[in-house]
Image 1: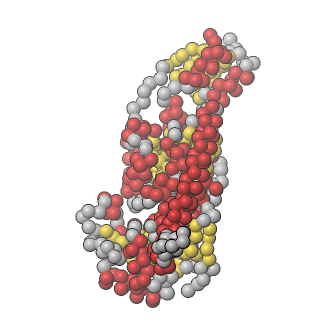
Image 2 (image 1 turned 30 degrees about the vertical axis):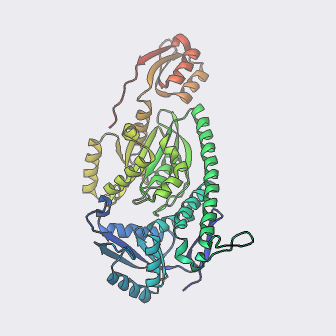
Image 3 (image 1 turned 135 degrees about the horizontal axis):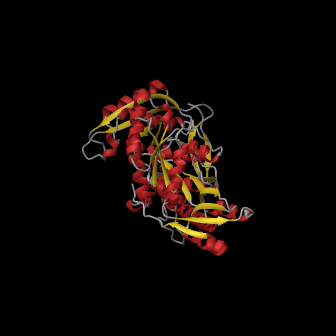
Length: 461
């Protein structure tokens, strides 16, 4: 076995599955077939196994073998039956594997018992996702969030690796006493660290709120990208903004949020926000830890739900995203803010492409596009513009041709729909304005401004 090196995340968490050479790993998907399992576990086992392999490859593990283990009656001690445990033990020995990735949630006891049986390190789905996040976090906020989630995960697993933790320390005072066990002391230290991180993240939330208030004074609407990991959010973000955010065919390629100001077809500016990708069975602790990052979704004026329609599991992935959005507080009332972006059009075969195009036309608030080629991006921008302007009034404003400052003011603060020069030399500008900006415009343009169409309520799709 290769010697392991330790990577620090956030200054206090050790991730120890990497080495100077690639760590050989077996990826095991547990196919729960019991009747009480949630609907999400009814996906094709092969697709779930491939996703687990993708997660493992995201941290550069060398995949020695891939295994599906059907489970109808989970064992409290090992989750798997004794026969499957013995079979994997033989496979670990034959493949000289150092790590077994179990695509399921393991209890601390199950994880400890499987490590004893297999003679290799065992990582469950939550632990694997934490390892990936530890690799991807690059900002101070990101590393704090990863460390918080990892400490919460480790707190219940201290007994797994350390037998000395049950030793008793002597108490204070002349007579002494049983005092505090090493396990209790370590848990207390972890809890103290968790409390400190939570306070630091509270400061992050306050800072983000101040930044948000600053943006509200501009004011620019916020358009947030959400979606299943590897759906192409960062590629679309780069296409719309001209940025160079890391975009790879890799699960959780980006973790920290990124924002850019972009201009819509009629010149209106919006803030485009890219967020961390979602995934099925995303641990609750991670959702809680990344709430500060995901708050941008909660306050967004438009939410772009990016879907990989070329993926065989696209519909199930969409259900996973909707489930997380619901946990974040995106209720049915705000569903009208969500635009479905069906990405990776370029990867569809001709027949399936035609079917998807027809399906997208029938579905309100849906755009089919390719973030790689740019096909379909223009209709998306028009749809965003329509959503943002749906509740704003449209005005006619007449300006002198020499009033370049007035024209620039309208382009900067409103959505200029048409601009025409008339015979008398004046410029007629048709513009959509928010109520706040319309008040400023009345003070600036006076009689030269006329309301054309009162806003209409647009029903949620």
